[in-house]
Length: 169
Image (cartoon, rainbow, N blue to C red):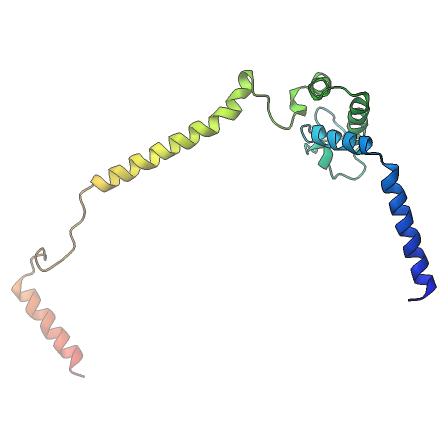
């Protein structure tokens, strides 16, 4: 390789190493904590600007002003060292419970957590009931020599004559 190609790559490597050293472990833990808490919040709740309703840390709308403002607020609170519950309650007070990505497990919202299990159990009981009913139905008898339907001798003779004519070819 020529010096023209190697020099930019080496410079880029040094810049990358310098940036990784510039972020201290405490800041990395802080951003990880902010991402964890941001994963519990929704973007665009309660504002007419952006109604995307995506996870805050995963909002992919270009130029989304709402997620930018919410993330700044979140980063400030994490930098202050506020506990997670306090941060979440602050967002709930500002935007309402709709800002939470999962409903709280208390009060009426508890129904959202319990109902899927009732539906699963109810569906399983329904399936067992239907299968039980089907298995107890009288089965249709197949046309076997023992249970063959009665055919008149005249009709049987005509059918034999017709099949003989058609197969003589």
